Image (cartoon, rainbow, N blue to C red; front, side):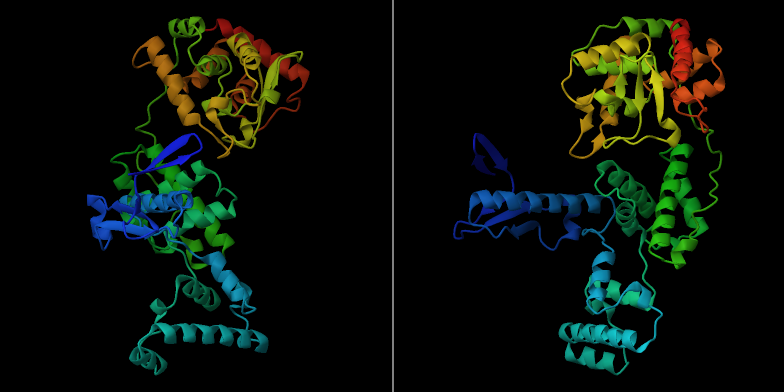
Length: 463
């Protein structure tokens, strides 16, 4: 292990290495036992191309992340190297020959001349990479076209111009995230890759149209061993969305007709578990609980208690979303740069009453950050840490109420029960919970807020 000092910090770099008879630094580590079949040697040694330790340390981090990503992919049943479609680079390669995807079916003189120039370049590449006898056999049509002698970019460009370009399932997440503008969102990246990995681990890595209906049924049965039917349905919908969107946007006609449609999951929902409401005694204990060492947790629990908001919705709240001086104190819930909303209906105004009001008053008084709960916001990654917040809230509730207590998500269901008990109309309940499909005409008006606040205040005594 080599150490490097930067200013007042000393960093240990476990795999930084320099041979005694050389000046260049290396990244060197042993291949884990379970991954040895995927590597030619028991050790990985990569030259960092640097003789200065500080510069080597910078390169080291990139190489370390590269190898860690390889290990992760292999353990998830994916190829060692990230399988890239090279679609964009292939398009750029064709552009260098004045060709585009639109030229696939064109046969005019100018297009044919451009295609010939491109094919000549491919022929040159094969000539450079093939033994003379193989090249001659290819030229004499004695062997099939040796695509394996081209690099991936060239193969993709050739497939595009010939009109038979396709992607395998493992390539869809990257293109889907690129096309939908979500490549920078770590959560979206992980979710997209995870659902595709689960499909590949069961049915292999193929283009969408090559998955049969029997493959999908096998995937459903395979997944039921560890997942609930609602989770399987959600994952299949995510897979179908990726396949449909990418194949449509990239004009992959064959794969637009995939089988991930009108899916049937036997006994869907039968294995679901109804979320338990908080009872009156539990609600009383929550109202009386002291502020914890992490005040954000207490404030968040009290906010959810008397609004029925989701954890994720709480996490992204900003200082400017809270309107305490309004005639009816309320908060404005909408999509922002770190947090999206579950549905369009989730955008709403929520009156603040009871502990939700006092929690926001205390939170604002004790923060100088633009976010109400900065601990659970990552501006760098442009996301909220709602899983972390949920775990912290649930831990606090378990400590307070005992093992088996309802989770923080049960605040939503409990609020609906409380509102029903005070005879709050269903359309108002749906608007408050973010479930309404049609928002009322006077939505966000002072009278509308006052009406909702009336029912929510009455609900403070319910249960």
